[in-house]
Image (cartoon, rainbow, N blue to C red):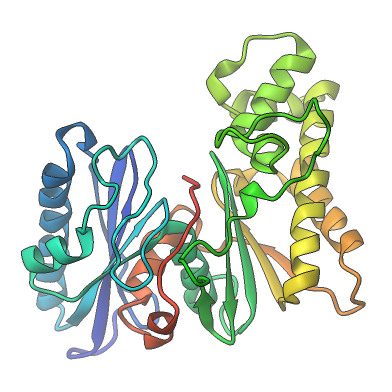
Length: 328
């Protein structure tokens, strides 16, 4: 996509992950997608990570200046719960040690001398898809990210709803199994959706049924086996798809979105192996005859960074900012 005319607005978005930092520069049309990717030196602590983020932002700011674009601010997307008012990371994943209760928003703003907003990664993904991706032009979008974990977010009338405490959309911890033998979620509690339909959970289920090694939670070998007709792999994927569809369908019945968008690391699984069954299960669960449309992410792995950048260009997110999720 081409950039807009000189003097037009641009935003910078940063996806802060445990292994990499991805920063993008976009204009209001989602064009001008310059990107910088560097490794996250999380073992050195927040100060070193801040230096790397600031360097990426300065590089993109310089590129914007060369193109006559005016950078309005910076959005930073991170897994965990983010204080909706202050932008402080209240909880983070183990891959970002030292960041809990760290005022990244204030520190980074002082470093780069630009307005900065810190928000949850899945809320950022939802905002990006609603503004510039699969939900473009749709006001009420339920976004579900399925990968290492499962997170969600809901845009209502064009704004992200993050709840009273910034943790709305915690879909992965919806209970789907109350049996005494229910699987344990990474959070430690039994029966949560994330223990059944996340990538590591499906890989572990296959290993258990097939009697193979766990594979370190890597779902790719399972998908490949399913592609080649492995009945166990196909059944495990199908079972997870049904549970995911039912859970999201129940949530869709409550929220009544116009569109459900699925993203995250599992979005690339072939539809015939997984997503067709998710959609069918979801639609079976929704009671309304005017059920939601279903789509997969249009922004892919850049959704969090692009979504974070869009928060600097449209003020509606500011009325409801930040939140919870945890999918890489």
